[in-house]
Length: 541
Image 1 (cartoon, rainbow, N blue to C red):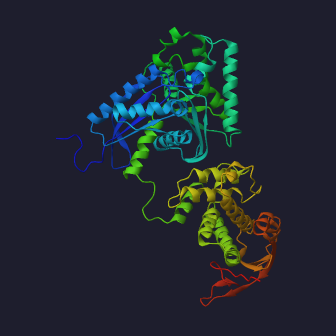
Image 2 (image 1 turned 90 degrees about the vertical axis):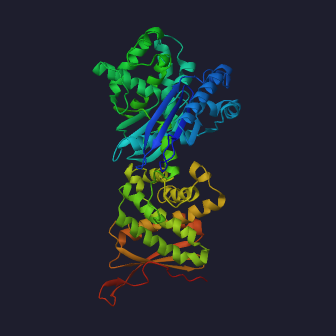
Image 3 (image 1 turned 120 degrees about the vertical axis):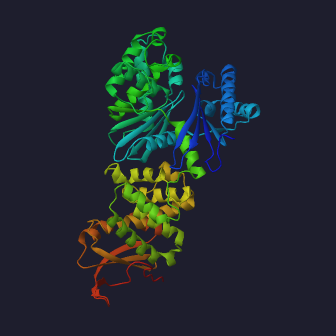
């Protein structure tokens, strides 16, 4: 009888080909969107050894790695794996002969190796952390340290604000900067400065004080193992184990004091990692200090776990979205997750669409642009989840890293840019996010952001005093007539000072006026003058 029974979800396998090690996980999906591990295998092949100085993968390490991949493929075949995905990270990504290595793996073992980008690598580690631990309401950094690079994701709750990849892998730093054994003080200063410079360039000023680092990769598991032994006198898998920054600092100090021969004997530290642990531990300590974080949670999953979870999602075993859910409902759910003010957002969306509808015919504004404007309005203040001061910039990152069901990546990028410019600076070619867009997309971002900027001003007091806006176009003039029970002084003042982007984008002059208009409908309910939501008024010529 075959191992996989009829009706069961097909078995999956992931091979993570890193700079330092190669790891296999074979898993059996379950109905709940997770999986049960059937087998694991690891080989410390040091594929990226010497890459820093030569720019190439060495023949010896390539052979070791190809041999390991062949054995792992045989294990997967023996367990009747239906889907196998092998990914390579920084070593194969950067090496001149990385493509030759991939071809040889395909020729010898029938294994197709994907080279994933640093961003994908970071997001896989984040997905693993998000699924394994409760991050709701916490300011978190997810860090994955490999042999060649450090990937960092900063998230507010389980929503991503920043993704970056830094050349701070344990093997790379050891080859470049660990010049003595035990490490001399002057060499420690050089190592520390190099790490701090890279963190400054890659992260900049942290948007928030990080409460928790969720760390994956061999460096974190080794540190967790050593701290666990020091606390409890027992060795074991430190997955889910929390260590403090002070404990990590004490372990690093000890590692720097003893030579390699003695480090190989330290309890909780795998001997094969002893030669690169000083550099790896230094990255953990400096990262924690840079982010102002005192707690480190060890995740034994990381990239390979995220890879399996991604495969489960694509196979239909797990799904993050209910079938048939509308696009705007996905935006609303995203905004709720960011704890946005739903009443304010819905009101802004209504005002923005009324302005858009008055401009639609005179300026040839298509319904596709209207849909994007509505989505941007509903999500315009999600950045408050991170902080107030730069919430428009944080909103851009949160939206860019979101998974808005029904929207293409291109549409998500346009929505994120419209939100990015709903306040403060106007779009500039010097802004990387704006420069990446096509000239046509830049023009649409300017127009939609100009409309959104004015609409947001029309609820400056968050009291929804402006019940309706009527938009009239006459030659090179646009007049917004505000319908309100009382004169909306704050809203008019704010709108008039935020006309610059609108006027430049449409090449018009914008006027804002107030018109009182309250009456009763047939049911006796109070209504305002005008037509409410939906298509507004325009008069061209």
